[in-house]
Image 1 (cartoon, rainbow, N blue to C red):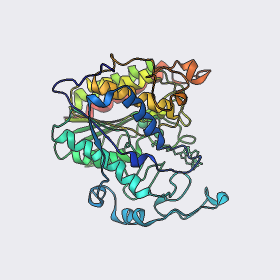
Image 2: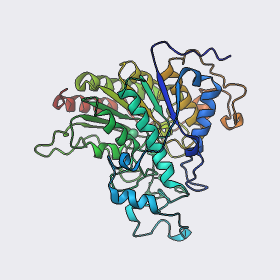
Image 3: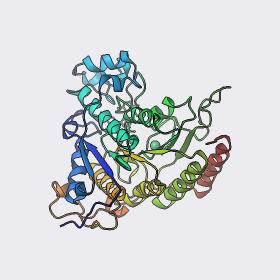
Length: 393
Ligand code: VJV
Ligand code: CA
Ligand code: ZN
């Protein structure tokens, strides 16, 4: 008895495929598709599946992948086989084709199936929005924002987000893309650099020499070449280590509020990378599950067709908490679920604490020093506000 009911006249579709989750990037690689299994186990244990339409994602077809990716790249991706790379050479292999086979983007068994399922879920979700069969679509297996037209990058091979947004653009004149992964959403930004029909906004840790991918400075706002309609349509929010829920929420709400008002999107695509949470293996922020979820809540309030993607997230117990909480926000049952984890959730010991909302002390022991001054955050908001003078709906 979970007490979770389906809201009338309001549909959330949930897209996943258990076959995707069994793939391995390698024993010690930080990207663990298994985190999707842990997330679902929490979502199902809370009884949320009864309040959603659940779909097993199919693999996207070659033609669907080719709406963004080059056929050269797809052909190679479809035929390469995992090849053990000698340990001492893996970081200095000089001629990786399409950046495939290094330590960030290794070749593994079933790679093409893994990628096409991730894209299939995202694309199905976008189609549910277009057909008005759902109000919010969820594809936690997607969100692979670094992949380029003909290049793998940062654990991402196929850019499911770009493919899903291209689908949304068939029905909606303008799409707003928001990216709260701790890394810069460079692949999505670049894909839509020359159109004014997509506005991309990424919040990320920025340190060009020490943090991947090194792009996404405040004044990188799209090529300002003479007749580029896409100029000014890339918003970048570069942040420092240790940002807190309170600061992030203020900045997120202020920036997204202004953008929605000016750009008037017909749909919102939100990448919910969970590596922006405190205690992430690769991340640097101090966000808690509540602060991360507040971004989803804020976007939902506009009552626009909304698609939620996964993305990064390298401490699986925190990823599962965030995506379970955000699923509850999408459904509208966040006020009904118990903050104590369900008694019978599989892998309960993985979670360490039995709460959905661990405190910073529980997560980190000692919080990370916050290197974001209020002055700097105000300057960022000021820059974005000025940038928006060049944007019209
Ligand atoms: O920083 C980098 C690139 C290097 C070269 C490769 N070495 C391993 C690391 C430095 C310059 N890559 C980043 C990529 C981050 C991708 C984030 C993806 C997302 O969250 O935005 C969306 C899904 C990086 N940071 C950390 C690592 N790579 C890393 C890779 C490993 C590893 C440990 C750390 C790969 C294999 C193994 N350990 C065994
Ligand atoms: Ca980001
Ligand atoms: Zn990331």
